[in-house]
Length: 415
Image (cartoon, rainbow, N blue to C red; front, side, top):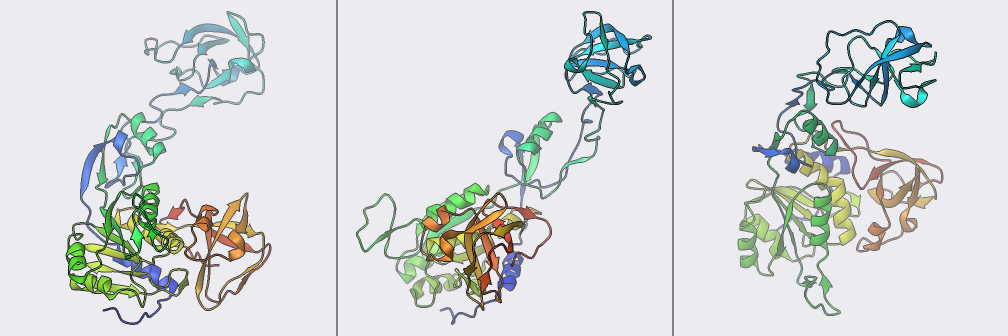
């Protein structure tokens, strides 16, 4: 049975939670079409200069910069995809090339002007204005990346811009870490699944579905494993069956006064508790530990509390566990638009909405931890330190975006 809660300092809880998130990950090679949100397990290098050759950034005319301000004869037209069959040719005196976007630029031209910026355009000639700078609209070979440059660092999560880079290199297979497996389950005799009928004394199990959706939004895959049985022997066997997962996330059943069988079932399965209780509101009874090779994360049962603390504590843990380098919360600065009070002596998590650099606290910071609509109204959270009792009008505040901003270096997120 768990001992009486001993509330851990907020920063110490963050530190301990990240210390728990250590594992040796296996890697796999997959097509880039399936690599979105996967984490690179080694550096992926540039195999072809980007651009691969000097090319035009737009439809126009390629010429020598020394001919700015002059009328030039059009030597020939160059189209994207043309083979370099005239590599030895040179522009004659007062000559230029007509050239299309993406076409290779001959070495004797160093500047390009857009068609619409030319003067006196005819079938045979153009006049170049005298204010065109050398190198305009010319994309030089390897100006973005050179062969052997790092395209994607080990530990970097692959996004759509990375996939564009890989495709530009002709890279179709990448080595990534295998995704961690996550089990999500609930506790509580009063719970009914959304497809069941619930009486007035029963509530629907929204926590598990909300947590899974939250994890999916951040690129993780989670499996719903149901509700822990209301029986010590059955719950012990049930929890034992979850040891195949890298992470087990529960909600409810861990506060003082909750059913002891949940705690006992975890302990009978070898759970080593890292901490149980954090000096934060909401979310004090949160617990974490290790059970064999599985990371166990127990969230409070109230929906708002569970979801906010998943964002604040758990997402960084999972990102680190997945092999990502950037797992520390980053913050944005905003100006608070109405004063509100917070409870001194503990860290407070305050929901709100950021818009155009301004922070608007949700419902004047007057909502219960079991409320769901407060989350719906919010897109960010503010975290106060334990000495704060009031946030003033027009005060500069640090805000965590609920969509997530993460960096490789830790930052102080407390206001």
